[in-house]
Structure formats: structure tokens, C-alpha cells
Image (cartoon, rainbow, N blue to C red; front, side, top):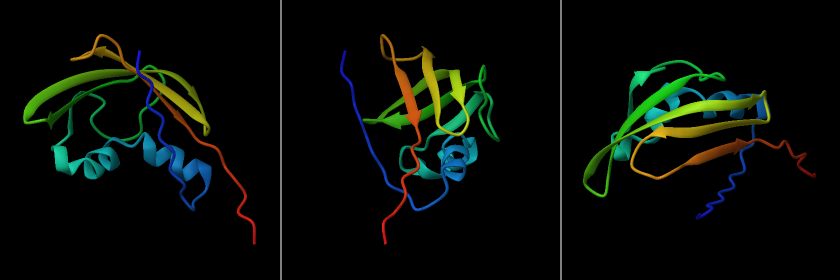
Length: 104
């Protein structure tokens, strides 16, 4: 199973980053290039444990749908979503937030 890791450093409090990452409207704005939108389940606001959302987007010229469920959440450090329906045999997405102090 392939594993993809991505790190991004943001100068903002960890709780702000955590809430932005689970905000459906923000996700839609940041994925405008693929025309991603929430079409079922939670379609606005902040995702919480137990929520599902179905995303529709165009990747490689093909319109696709993926339904994900939030299965784990420890505010404001981690949440995990898993694909419950979609094009892959499985897909688990762990969002981890670590606050680091910036040296002067």
C-alpha cells in the first residue's frame, strides 16, 4: 500500500490550523482547480467525529466521487478520515497538527 506524507509549515496557532483543515467551505475554496465540492453528508461547517462527506471533483479529466467518514478525532492535534465509497480499494487520511515554537 502506498503511503504519501506531506508536511506544511504555517505560522498560526495549532487550533486555528486544525479547524481550517476540517472546514468544508475552506476545503472547497482551496480545491477550486479540481472543482471539488461537497455534495452529500456534511456540506458546510466543521467536520466532527462520525461525520461523513461525499466529495465530487474532476481528476485527470474524469469526474469522481469519494465518500469519507471521520473515524478519529483528538482536538486540536489529529483527525482521521477513511474512504467508505470511491475509486480506491482503500484510503486512510491522517491529519496531524504539531505546534512548534519558532526560534528568534
